[in-house]
Length: 226
Image (cartoon, rainbow, N blue to C red; front, top):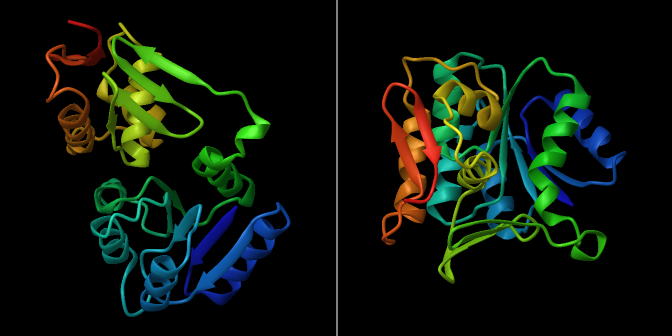
């Protein structure tokens, strides 16, 4: 597994690099957004750990540029900005996870493992599939098809769909989605959950007769075949 750590504080960058290398990750570091952009465009990474407040090109703008260029490498934002609005901005820019400073390395490592699990060699695992109606999710290759048609999802959209499928037929509140998929305490003043559910619907439901994701007014959402 190869990780790019984008962090302008030298001691923090070295701390993360050392810890990850001790856990068998290969690590490159960048101390500003321009260098990070060059590395991300030039190399294949399994994960990018990205600070927001960095010189030359901040983490939010960098994440947006990577997503515009169809670079779907998972992004873990690691920053001192801890307000809910900061987290929502991070997710909206294309981040897959968000961890605030100060942090414990074991929690960082757990987040890294979760975001890079898609790249575990196939020989080390059996194929795991989730199916509902004509939708199929391959949890090993991180691919989704519906009626044989491939559907391209971001890492966060994939996690959201996986949670829906695993809870098929169950009413799921926005607060539960925020906690289980984003690791956030739900803030009723934000609409990040609704925005991502809408993204997901456009990809998995819009072109198909049978709809899977349904709104339960006043409650949240439910995945069921209708």
